[in-house]
Length: 425
Image (tube, rainbow, N blue to C red; front, side, top):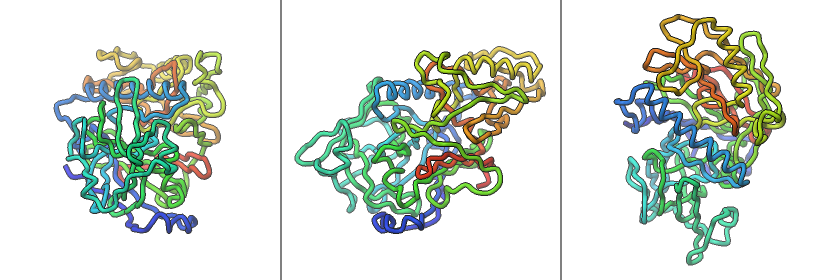
């Protein structure tokens, strides 16, 4: 199915834009959940329970690689089938392809011809010989020297990313024109993968929104003022509406309801400081480092990753147990077991219960989470708490971000939230 994009047109050289940083361009593209009926990967035979089970498995794999990256001090791509997808053009004339949007990645890459080994993808592979703007990066170039696992072959730069699950991508580091709708971004460093393997859900590769020096965000920072934002639609709206990914002037959050918190950048990932949660009128403080043997859950300067590719919100076990107890007390109704064993706390939808508002207290920013952010409904007639305990890295997942404009400002190092009906923007 064709994915339509709404975008404010700009066609201008990034080299020119770097001289006019005060006049930041603004543009927006559509993003879709991989399981939405708008997605070419949509499987109508899957039940909501199966969809959630698949999302849970993807999230579990993602957590594993966040942990590995932070423990090793490296910043690899996160191998996963992705949660959100966007269509973009590559080359001149632009060749359209579909890729995973990832805030945890620092290299944009796609599968390319000639292909030594490639995984299945929906669209044909990109052929660099058909583009007039494709240029291989030389070994002496700064981007090549930036990559830890780069090598030289006849003066051309080659890259390699590999992972503990044996997923990998290898190929030529090159520059190319990237097109987002009618927006043309020349000279973007990307990976042209000729030897690739892993679980990428039939997408062609990755669009990197991480903080690494050659991520798409870092390369276009002067043009977009270091600003981008998401607006993710609710599960029920995914049938007919895409979400939005905004850049530059379009990513500025303003007006009533905007709250901002410090954004801590660490090893390519985006961290926030979660000070606690409130259920109704009961405040639950984030636990001290004594509750977390690996220190990831310590209170202080950046204790939770905000991530677009993880479904659940994952918090330390001690905080989760207090959260679940408070929700049980506030609801009052009798919980029922989840037959799929995906969730710890569930209620029957038919019981017509009143679910409490949960407020996430970040530094200087209180974010009021509505039931759409804290409950997931299953085909078994249950609604379940969309939080889970984790002993590793706490993660603020994408369900908690639904119907919020979530704005990243890498210049001011702030992250902002604004309650928004994302199906109408």
